[in-house]
Image (cartoon, rainbow, N blue to C red; front, side, top):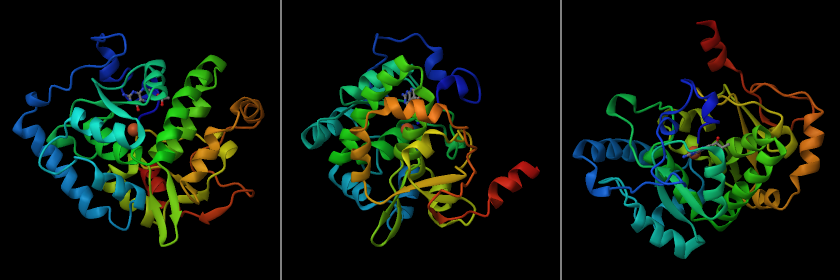
Length: 295
Ligand code: HBI
Ligand code: FE
């Protein structure tokens, strides 16, 4: 979920500080070891989001969640979830201590293994944490992995990430992931809905992204997104909107190489920029981020 660890607020993210137990950085989830307090934090987060999401999360998210053994009572057991996930889209969930090196992350995704943080945030940091915990990864990402289009798209992202690293353009591809898998919106017949895990697992950003007047909401365009920087420590200034999840599958079949060349020749864009060529769905007031800059 976060940008490359080096760019996270406090230098190397906690997860990367440790030396890995295994070369692929996976660990045992150790489900029996979760304390009552940790299950209680899960319950608080789960119940808050579950009240917010109907009418705000996309139908595919609600449907995916319904089919999974994920409930309010306890932190889900990854093996039990993986049994359902494998049958549905061939994915499984593996436990990791936190952020793992990019190439390890991509290697897992390319083989339909989703690395999910084993730890859960503390009760005093419900609304912001530096790196993806089990609530962000499991509640935010796993339901969408039940959807065949997203399942194929994220595997393609893994394969693309390994290529992008070799080409030295990982930052461009990471923006595509960020503005879709993490912070993407989709236009349903009954209105704007969330499919991005970073939003759907965030109590405050869920409403901000689809209801607040502050952010821009622009029609998704691949080259445009590749040029656009993003925020890692606050709400997004711009959300990119696709017409249907199938649009992402189209991306999985594009040869990014010529696109990387074209984008490299164009200036990078700030998160709040709006271009004349943009298809604007709502033009934001920018009030939220302006107020923060004013402090
Ligand atoms: N590691 N566990 C974990 N989860 C992530 O979302 C993640 C990561 N490492 C790298 C990373 N994301 C991003 O830097 C890449 O998507 C570029
Ligand atoms: Fe994430």
